[in-house]
Amino acid sequence: MDNLNTLTRFDLFRVFLRLLFMQGLLNRRGMQNLALANALAPVAGKIDAGRVKSLQSRHLDFFNCNPNFVPVIVGGLLRLEVERLAGKPVSDNDIQYFKKSLAGPLAAAGDMLFIGSAKPLALTCACIFAIYKFPIGLLAVFLLYNLTIISCRLWGIYFGYAKGWELVDFFTGPVFQRLLGVVHGIGAAVAGIFVGVVFDRVPQTGPWVLVMGAVLLGTTLFALRRNVPASWLAIILFPISVLLSLLVGRW
Image (cartoon, rainbow, N blue to C red):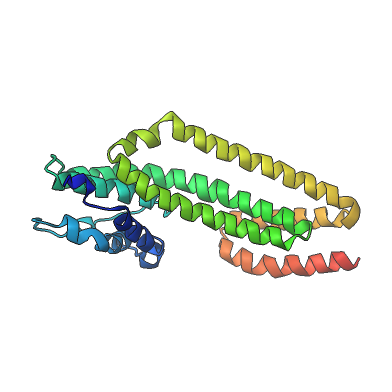
């Protein structure tokens, strides 16, 4: 049997399941290295044949990337491991270079795509549904966002395994850059809709809503410039915002 078929789709799915919980093994010294080694455990027996060092021990060096793009890299490195098992000239250094060459760029792209675009997009949609008191919409946005993230991770491990070395060209090529541009465009459009919704509600709620929002925004920006942790701001400003909303509603 062709060694490139050593790992089945179910094997990759088992690795994917472990990667869903990878942030639980985050550590200061190696960041995501323990999570990566743990995720490789289900397939180690198929790839370790004849190797002096086990698959997991070979991947305990420093590793860090956006969690949503880690499955892509893991799928690619498994493809390289299987190619080496098939007799192709793939060394440990080649695989380490592959991991490092993708981890940095995909970390930046993942932060931009998921944290900088997808999450604000979901939150903006949630705000619009909340303004129109549509609770089912809030639930739908929550489910849609999480299903999108999980689907991207599942697609990533199969795509990475199918491409191998070709991943480097794919994520530096024009197709992926166009994808980032489309996501940014959608985010900007939804943000514009949100602004329109807010101004549409002003005649019903009064201008105090805009004043309150401007004050809270200014306070947040000032606090961030003073290096106040964002988590503290969330804890402090959330109950204040709720209280002010209730007071404005009574007025």
